[in-house]
Length: 596
Image (cartoon, rainbow, N blue to C red; front, side, top):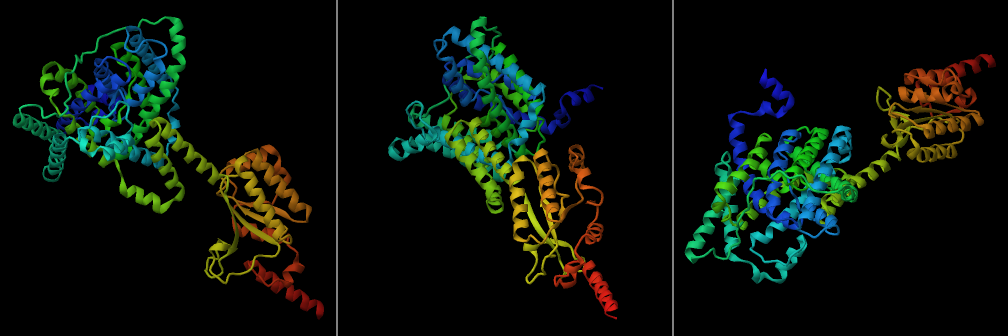
């Protein structure tokens, strides 16, 4: 009974076996090695002592992995959260002071509680508005950012503090002599070893072994030059065991922190959601967004009590975790535990790992993130989706990640609203060149095609008619009436009109009034149930009367034909419908009898 219960609580538990353990342990070891230097750097960005960045790679990482939905997302401090925290708290307390640390931990707990509310109220449906094109642009942009920031350590550059991603390229272009050839050699060895192993031994932990090859190269250079050859290394790592600490913050400070917590919640959720969806898109996993929000909320709410500041899904660790072969969230758990173990027992070796080797690993991750085939497909298929992906890509390179995703999502929603506000309104004709005589849009018929019926307009409505689309549809229908006023009757094929609102209902009422005023009428073919319900609730169905709603085209034409002017039919040369021929023959017979 224990296994089924565990599977219900942790669905990924069904994937755990000896095979997954081996891959998860290997990915976890790589994740721990990556987490140590990043944690120290991010804590510095946040204005906190270095050990707080390492603390953030332990408790939040474990909780989010077990309580969340994604099998590959690794949670911890990020540069965006660190910079946002620093900017928000620095006006309230001296950076790095005990009070500043208490504020940082208190706001982390508040962020976690807000995230729990989002997940608890099941607002994760908002994630559905992040389209695949947004994720494509975000992932590609993030790959470029990872690669650019990794270049600093890969080339052994000493950059001014706060240098931007593209500032790194400018620095390289202006100071090529600053490239440290020993660091470049270590990075190149790491790349070569990893790529060779991927080709010849793909089942081995290639990224970890490549990192060890870079480590060995750095050690060899240090022996040859009797020093560390000037290669920057991870350096001393403080204790990784996070202490329990309740932040000492009064009610006044909590009030000041509330707006900061809300802003940081949006930043953290935006990053976590984007990264989780990007990773899930590459792994093929179905993501439970609400559970992911709950996992992130628990990670921050509990992590804040264990000296961890605001954390979320980390792209720099999640993608290496996926590419290193992680199978279950246990890889993130192993990474967190190994952070503590490595600092406690292997700190002397960890601190000697060259940053150039870590940078080479991140360059490989960045390369794997760029889906060239998907870009070709999007560019070839859809101009709109290409614009959405392109805007998100450039936004990711120029503004904070969460805002970039928000901008891309906004552009995709605007594009969607534009499309839905311009439903296609297509005049139809029977395809006389086919036995079925299927009603076909006129522009799709081969030339020469027949004429339209001079009395009856056939129109297909391809989309819902709501307040945003009502004006466009109204303009099209008015154009039809103005171009051919003699077509007083109209049959609308509306099975693709999924719903209408009051504005749409008013449009059809106006169309009915206009056509009846000139002696015609309107008819509908296969309106959907929500449309019929709206017609009934507003009284339009009663005003239409019997014989205006049809379930088949043949039935509709037979009934409408009785409303057409027989005198016009006698002289008509279009003969669009099957009924035209029988009416013409009957008319000729009637004329012959009267003449006789």
